[in-house]
Length: 275
Image (cartoon, rainbow, N blue to C red; front, side, top):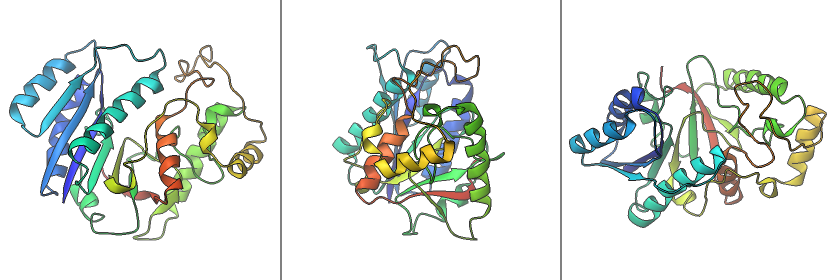
């Protein structure tokens, strides 16, 4: 069994030593592995860290982006993740697994490789993310009944961010022992995929409402008592102030909706991989 570890990197220097150590620990679970990174211009010493690591690990390769992509963050991240997918299609399509991850503070914590190991030979998932210490945090990428779309596209979006966060943590808590929680989309900073199920999918940071079935959208509107709205959130004063919901959505949602249409099973494990 082989695996690719993939992701975008920008301003991640403080975390990279630990993240790469964790990748090496997880990589030992496989017969072979590769690390594929899309680097974007940083204001810290991320680039130097990548050069140093490349000298130490021949399994590591990174692409340096020199072209402006978009003013929108989700569009830039989607391009980075799609570059990694293109590399998998061209060079590693025979690898049974790939992992898409963030190279930041979430994945620089202590890793419990036994958590990932216990799922490797199970056949009840195609895409699998994990719980995190302190609770599931990545609400933007999450699509789960009855919340199928982004909370940013409904009224009272900050309120529903908290409602959905409490809801998903309750759902995870109630998962029976040794079972997984089905969903439409999840990431939470780290997800492993069965390569063949996702080769025809792509990440898209635009608002891809066309991928979401109308009954799902209606159910979400009923759950929030709100129509779908498109607005600029730049004046909100919150940590999400730079999101433009007229143009942006989490890039993982489109990727997972494409996979769902091909029969992929997206699941969340209640186990904590990084603690």
